[in-house]
Image 1 (cartoon, rainbow, N blue to C red):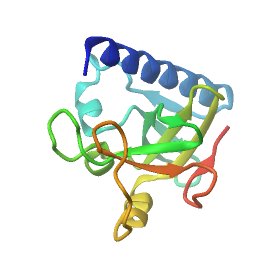
Image 2: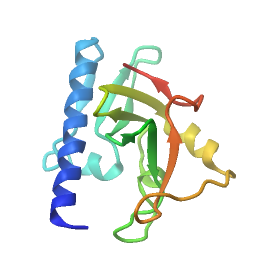
Image 3: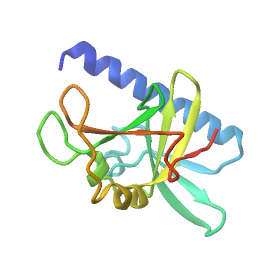
Image 4: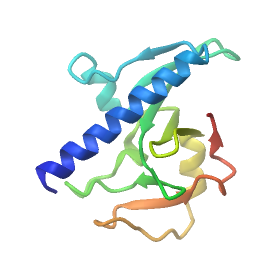
Length: 148
């Protein structure tokens, strides 16, 4: 991976985080923002960017924001291509994933444990340049719900 790809990926990811957080706040959703890596290394290493107040349970749910929708598909990193270790899909401690489509300004949500159970036992083909991702269509998976 080149420095440009890393920087470009970071910029897209950061833009997605900012857009999702702004949209959630505009909708009156109470949240705690942990996207500043230097300030919140511990939470970031656990794999979540925000905590969102669940009004049904009065608990704070952890969510990871991914800007990873392309052509109607979201991508689940199952293997870290840089190290060969398990990817965020298996290591994240988040309760849910907020996956954002930067091109269309749409955000979707899914429960991470439910998605792990869904993927288990299925014979998905790995995709991506490094064969490290599962691709799922956002509009054809019952676990993925459009948030905005």
